[in-house]
Image (tube, rainbow, N blue to C red):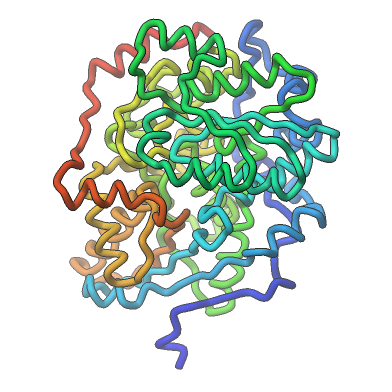
Length: 454
């Protein structure tokens, strides 16, 4: 019976054939990226040392829909469309009148949403004759996704993995090796950026900003190499919109529409991929009351504590300046286990929408997120990645509010990936070794002093 149904699926023939580009529908234009040296709006030719031209075009395009190449669709079909679940057992455990749905991206080969863009980026690089790519990774989900995509298109991949995650998550780096990628801890002695940091702090745990600097430095020093980014940039968010488009189509089939959409954010691509296909309805006034909640770690509170201004995307100041909420490009985050959320900045699109009041942000602490993930696993069965547990925490909070008010809201959760190779983090939680990390006010002042003058 339908009232007992928990899984909703699309046929492969119903997969999205186009990516949705929110730049076509923003009520105010996105602030431009600036050249790191001249501070002038960046030009397409300034990016050709890093990215293939098709991705550069997508970065600035204002076309509402961009066709997904057949070669990309052929690989996405290995796991897409992904399943939409009704969390009936969680609803019962919470005694909530809310209806909770979650779109699960953990069924991809690397176990997360990341290959939605990794496959596309590898394809466009191969099409332009590039056979080698460098990149960074935090928790290792992006690195493993690009390694998988590199194997699909016979591209050599080198990954600079944030050192603390390299140590905490050994099986993610082994996944990369299985798919043929080279994974090294960052900071490393292989780049000037890494050596500079290690000279000052030999035991530096690393940061995504620093790993980006290393990957970019190597890419620009070699004619045969491009750089690939797993989040933040417009074209990355674009590729992830298959998540939201599938979710929207599935909900339409059962005559549902979310009152609340919730997802975790580090750079922002996973959650943006979910909510961007819905936000047009809010902008157009079709669903003006739609609540969209971005959830981040309290120890790396970019959206909730950082100023909205121009900053570099990397520690060394080699990348374009992006207008975003930021904790300062030199920020080294504490070693929380949600390595994919330890980024000093955020996707400019998400920051712009937050600044316009179209979405909101919340910060939650590490211990609460793990308990939420355990509660979710004990009801729904899925052991989520530490990053996704942040979104689960707020989903549970919103469902409890419905229990208290008696409201029957429909909640849509973006569940970005599984935690099968993150069990050391759960082990730390059960052994009592996991702790919360504070973000002192003085760190915000440090960030303000380090921001570039624009």
